Length: 249
Image (cartoon, rainbow, N blue to C red; front, side):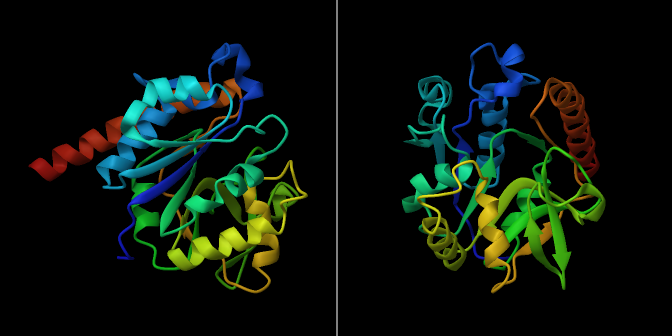
């Protein structure tokens, strides 16, 4: 088991423009799955795993997120969310990269065992990768010598070695490295995901990963994703209930 991690940064500044028909002006992280929002589920799972220092980077409809989550988290408002992607969202909150932590997208339905795998990783920079997926609407990865050698939508689906699911773990050293790399792009790459920095970083350092292909997850970008995610979450709940029953026998 790696060093205990008690902090998580949640990237939740985006608008979710492809889902506005469903969201009706609400922030994407407050999209309801089952009885709770994506953000509530994520925070509850983090707290279950004793990750209690949670920082949400907000942007679009920030007040609605604060009103919903209240004092379960701390907040960092990013005002330029309309004009940039999450590379600059994370760069804006670089002061939070001050210890070992999880860095998480806020639009993913997932089995919390994925978080457990990340928390158990010992390396400095670790991404959660599904090596069995070859999806068109998520960050694709290339793997070489057991390290991620490239990441992004520029990698063709037929040439990729899997998909990044939006969850990562950084040690204190890893957080310092990420912070330094982000600062290189303070005047550029406004439309890129923060994962863009790994393409250069991979040339000088191993970007490690945990394979979560045996665990359930779904990133939500479209209405079709949302329909599938709701069904998937019901299966996750059922799986976890069955596992609990087996352990109780």
